[in-house]
View 1 (cartoon, rainbow, N blue to C red):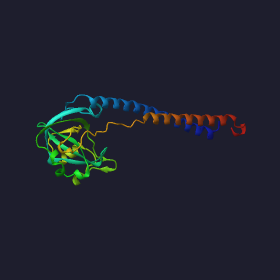
View 2: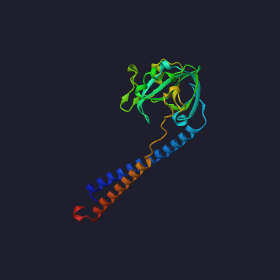
View 3: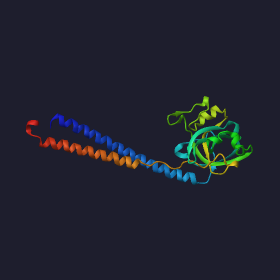
View 4: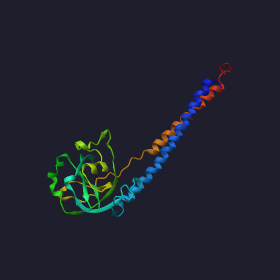
Length: 237
């Protein structure tokens, strides 16, 4: 077989191997995603446990979306508004430190529309007494949002970056995670909690089938190349 036919056949074989590897990777991702969905469904509906104190190991794999409960006093004068898009539209998450007496944990109390950005417009919900918060443990979101970086100096926030917010607000002994408050209503109706998104895209099986189909097409192309080489006149060999 001539070199000019062997080279494309070899390249197509490499492509087929690459497509198969990508398909296997997507199947592994599919299995991982289904395990995550099952774990989140279990954790988010289980009875609440005590929120872990700083120093206790917390990981996304083992703890994300676990229902937790914590008691303390909100430090409303140190709240942070994080830009958000929710089922209620565009606005802000109200992230407020909760002083437990032993440590401080950031609580995403919920969503407010732009006209409720000013704390004075929702003063009824900013009580000074001791409260108990039940919600979902969430891992930190460092850096910012898509194509938009957090700017602590300008107080512009696009993600709930625990370390950066704690530093900007001068919090002592902060927990390395934040809590999404549940839908328990706040006085005055704002902020609106319980809006954590628990739906996850699950397209990995479709991607895997696409990669495997491309691998089959590559193998089919190899067969055509080899077939042409086999039937080519002797003068072309």
